[in-house]
Amino acid sequence: MTLRDLIASLPANIRSCISLPPDPKLEDWCWLCNLEPGVPSEYGWLYGVREKAHVYMWNLYYGPPPAGTKWRRHHMCEEKKCCNPLHMILLTCAQHARMHVLAEHVKRQLLASKGISEATRLTPGQKRRKAWDLHNAKK
Image 1: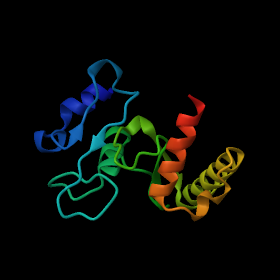
Image 2 (image 1 turned 60 degrees about the vertical axis):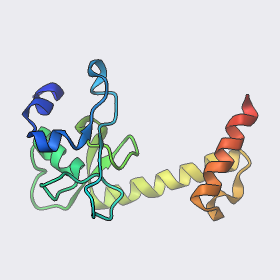
Image 3 (image 1 turned 90 degrees about the horizontal axis):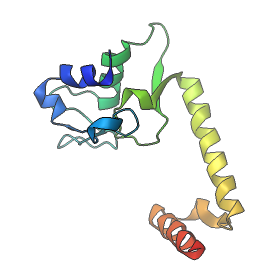
């Protein structure tokens, strides 16, 4: 099944929840899923399905994961609302936890190398401001 086939096979109510990119580069872009009203989550949820969009799309494209193990679908793009199946990999819970620990470690090292050693104690808004200041300082 190609990505175009996947999109064409989606029911209209589900397709309307997903912000699809310009046609030529479907595999490169994140497919952002709008949040269903009343669902407190950072992940996109599909209207009428009551399932996380990335789980639904993974199962539709690749089929359900093997039974017997708890699986997580990891967003390689780091966008939690993305439901593009090509942006995800299937990991066990332990692998997924290690992936996030490693990502945080690398992020802290990168910030420290840029002189932002206090970044772990900053609020998200302060971190964005620091990153913006750093970005503008390079210009």
